[in-house]
Image 1 (cartoon, helix red, strand yellow):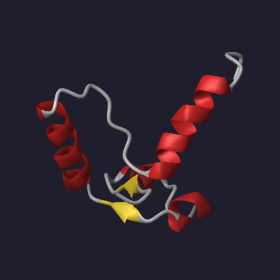
Image 2 (spheres, one colour):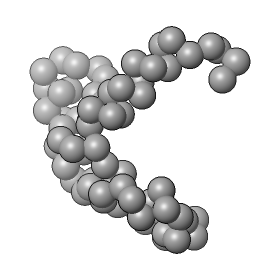
Image 3 (cartoon, one colour):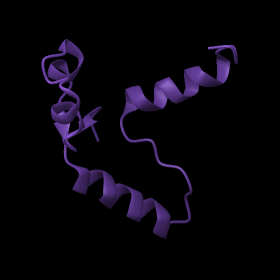
Image 4 (cartoon, helix red, strand yellow):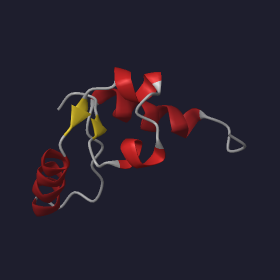
Length: 68
């Protein structure tokens, strides 16, 4: 799965659609994330982080100071 933000309506409701961040990120479907989560659940996995940059961010948090 590519790195995505999920099209949930949050950006529209928050008025963030004009933000460069939300404009730059490709929009994924919530159904795809749910499919991946269910697949992982059936395989016994408790944590799923879709997208390589999201996985990199989670890894980076392990090395970041707690004060951040």
